[in-house]
Length: 355
Image (cartoon, rainbow, N blue to C red):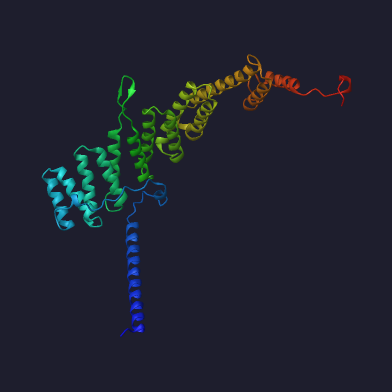
């Protein structure tokens, strides 16, 4: 016979059991997260995770990449045996199978480190860098962080070579190398070599014939690491590039202003470690060249192609920007003449026009 009360009690019991299971799962998840958090390397500030690139996608079990052994410990012994026998390719496969199958095992971090080391030994440096990055993204605190970071830096240095060219055409790009140097700086922003990594990332822009991005990269380095030795070298490189751009595009006043600003920043931040007289000379040249171009622009509207209103605006801007210029007094007089010529004639009865 069907009893409603008994059915209701069974439903309540099932619901309570489900609630208990859910609470246990939540507590376990919290424990895992707290355990992972305590392994975070000191070089990575808390805010870095929000600004960083997404972590490399986690390796998952694969039917075609199954481990040969039945436990992570036995599989790790297999990896070590293959490596000892010099069978690096098979050792990489075995280590990858371990990581995919037993990602949370104590042996997984060792196996992932071995993958990076073996790929490096095999000469596949880009793969080695990426495997080290996977280690940093997914096994924080479970490996020698400083050692891995140094290996990444050495790999990026080895890959840093001028692009290949043929008949004046660039065949290769350094974008991939630049991104690796920038990744190193993100991995450990407080590391002593992080400024050097950003310096080389900016150099990659210049080697790829993008001086604008290179100058901006050197400027960002100085802002981020003002006290680092690399900041002084970056200031010199930024000034060199911005001076060249100002000379190449003389009609672009913004480029000249940026070159002057770069010199001013360098004098203010590193004046005691740079040749102040040389920088002051370069600044004067840029200033005088920009002043001459501004005056020529105003004179063009006032003479060769008469546009009184445009000339008046240009003269006023010239006087505002260069109040102590040698032409300043003549410009003031000319402004007065243009203003008088452009002012409307008042209507009077004597002129025959009714008020």
